[in-house]
Amino acid sequence: MGMSRPDALDPAAASLAAWLASQRIGGLSPGDVRVQRREDSFDELSWFFEVVLPVPPDDGAWDVPSINRVKHEFRDRALAAGLEWPWYIVLAPDHDERRDDEAAAA
Image (cartoon, rainbow, N blue to C red; front, top):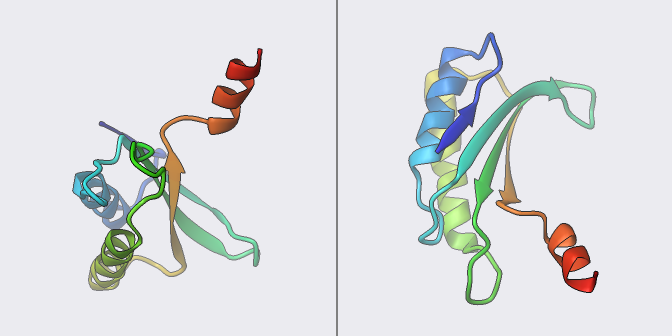
């Protein structure tokens, strides 16, 4: 399991990324947590935590209550650690479904 780390990653952000990487979301473990510090859509410098998850085999949907639990606990931990707001948790599939569909059509 990897964690992308910019050169000057804030210690609080690194700790939170490691915590996210250790969580189970609907029974699934993240394959990676990528952290970026960049401007959001409001041009405000923000933290982005991209959690890469496998697509569930049953219905292809991630467990929303489990996602919300992790997001709420992350918020509490980020506030306690003093991580500068804003921050975002973004979920990404561990593969690109569009590429899979294109490969199947070829």
